[in-house]
Length: 61
Image (cartoon, rainbow, N blue to C red; front, side, top):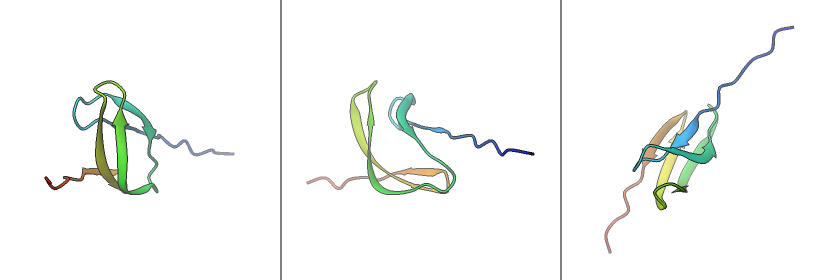
């Protein structure tokens, strides 16, 4: 019997490039997700669709 092995990549911080505490799968879809990085202690809004991560720019107030 053949078992499929899924590689689940970590979401990397868009600021410092280190691993965050979140993983994504190929079928993961996120909209306006607040991604927090424990290393640089910053939070960014991201969008994830089909393993493609996009940083959402917030408008200045």
